[in-house]
Length: 140
Ligand code: CMP
Image (tube, rainbow, N blue to C red):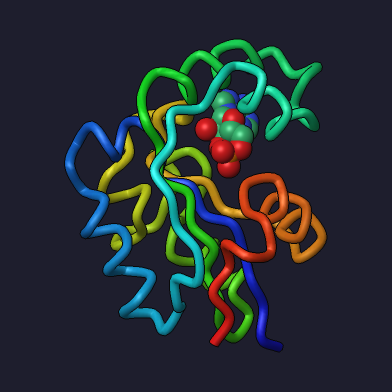
């Protein structure tokens, strides 16, 4: 099915100057960028985005990291976009990520893991609307 998913290029990958290389992987895999922005997240915005992890021991480190520098947020559209993006990203922990995935190639640690991607179509809907209004998404 044609799906949309939310993708975030995290502060570590922005600092490494690999925004273009990561976007290029999405495009080469047939995903289309239908919305995109670069933003510095406030603590409040990052905490709200990751609200489901609020009770986890890594929550504070996660929010510290996600607010440590700018991020690039995009909506990717394509056939089975949620899974397609997750396949491109590789495992959450880059040490477990398959060779050739974004995290294997660009990430350093489970915290500084280069990218975020929605884990289901349900969370994709929530995450897309958390960052983008309907007018900011350019339907094709
Ligand atoms: P992300 O897909 O952005 O969703 C939550 C993030 O928490 C995850 O990527 C990791 O960067 C970070 N994180 C840190 N520790 C863990 C952990 N033990 N399990 C899952 N995610 C973790």
